Length: 427
Ligand code: GUN
Ligand code: ZN
Image 1 (cartoon, rainbow, N blue to C red):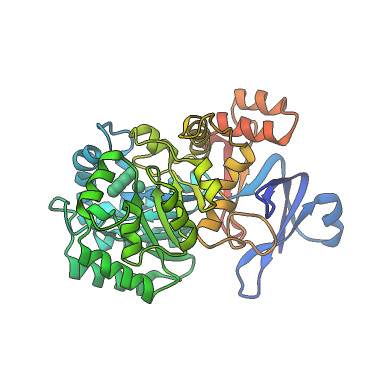
Image 2 (cartoon, rainbow, N blue to C red; image 1 turned 45 degrees about the vertical axis):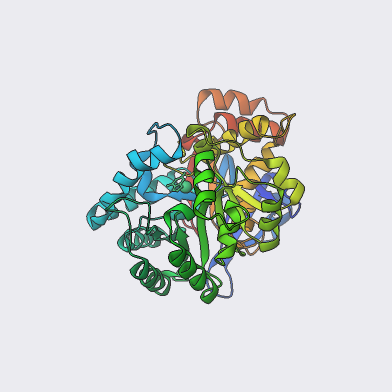
C-alpha cells in the first residue's frame, strides 16, 4: 500500500466535482492484484487510519483522475495541422497518404512509441484509438501501450472501398485479420480491441455485415467509427445507403450500435438519431478541436442532454489540433457557446472535466474502473501543477472557488501543467 497527499479532485455519481484541499489517496492491490484506489478523503480524517503507511506528499499540487481520450488516430500524428476544404479533401490529400506509410512496420513502431509518450505527457492514461488498415499498426500500438501500462483500446481500420491503394483492404481478409487481433489482444493486461469500420462510406455492405457479426460474437469488444461529421460526408452516406432512415441508422442496420460502440462527432443528427443512441447504449466521442479545425460543425450539447445519451471528450488527432485535454475542454466550451442551441450553453468547468474523465469512462462502459478516484478505481492519476506557468500561477492564486480554479486550468493549462502521470499507482 502507498498513499499520496495533495489536493484531490474526483467526481460524484451526479457528475459534480468533489474537491479535497488537503486530501489523501490510498492505493493498494485489489483481490486480483491490480493497483486501485483503496480509500480517498480528507488527510485529517483518513491519515490516522493508516499509521506507518508511506505517504508521498505533493504540496501545492492537485491529484486528479487520468484523462480519457475517447477518439484518436495514432497514425495521424504527422497529419495534425493539415489544412483542407473540409473532411473529404483532408482525408484524400493528407490522411490517406500518411496512413499508407504504416505498411512499414518500423515506421509504425516508431510512431506508436512517440504517440504513447505524448499521451502520457499530456496526462492521458486511457485512449480509444484508430490504427490504420494494416493489422501490424495495431500490433505496434498495443505493444507500446503494454510496455507503458497504458489502458489502450485500438483497432485495425476497415475500409474496403472508396479508399486509395495503400490503405484499402480486402473484405474477407480484413475480417479474418480483425478476429485474429481480437484473440491476440483483447483483455490482455490493460488492452482492449475495438472493431473499427472507418465510416460507412468506406465500407461495403459485406464488410459492415461482417463487422456486425464479429460485434455480436464478441460482445465485450468495443466498436468505433465516425458519423455525421461533415455535411458532404452525410450527403454521400445518404446516397450510398438510400434505404437507411439516416446515416447513423446505417450502423444500426448492420448490428453496430450497442453498448461499447463509440461514434465520433454525431454533429448532423436529429432527435430520432439521438433516441437511437440512447436506446442502444452507444456513445458519442465529441471532438471539438477537430470540428473547429475542419469546419465540420458543432456538437449539440442541448440535444444530447435533452434525449440523454452518453458522450465524452476526444482529441481526434490528427483532425484535432492538440493532445492536451485542457485544449479539448476549452474547445468544447466554445462549441457549446456557439452550437445549434440559441442562446448557447455555458458548460461548467466541472462538467467539461467530467466529460474527459468519469463521463468518458461511462461512455466506454468502464465507470467505476477508470476515470475517477473513488475506491475501487484503477489508480491512474495525474499530478497537476497549478503554478506551472507565470500566468497560470497568477490566475489560480486568485481563484475563490473550485469553478474558478478549474476554469483557470482549462483556459490557460497545457502539458506544462501535467507534472506527472501515474499508471496503476506507478509514476
Ligand atoms: N472520417 C473518416 N475517416 C476519418 C478520419 O480519419 N478523421 C476524421 N476526423 N473523420 C473521418
Ligand atoms: Zn476521427
